[in-house]
Image (cartoon, rainbow, N blue to C red; front, side):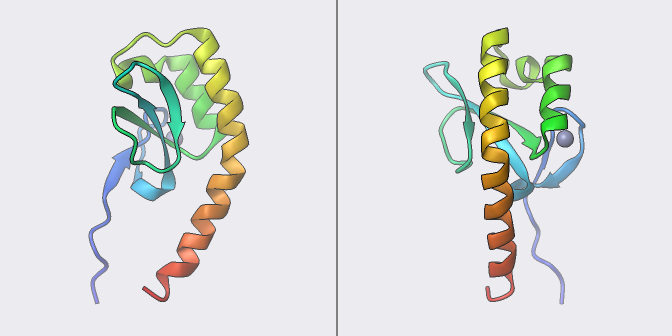
Length: 106
Ligand SMILES: [Zn+2]
């Protein structure tokens, strides 16, 4: 039995390749707004981060979002995203655990 091919994405901070669902997507909408996209389906250019605050801080330090989203990201946006990131982290981890449980009955 071979596992299905799982789409992989790279965390913009630690450069680790991971299954897409293990990562949190940051999206720049066509209107230029930068937000966390927990659904992974919002239109726009995306950057992926593993669901760890340490990686968010690393991305902030290395300006990884600027590069990945090809747009300047102001300090206030980083601050807002960081607060949101910390808030959604628990939610994200919980959702992931639920999904993992579902995998067994797929
Ligand atoms: Zn990472």
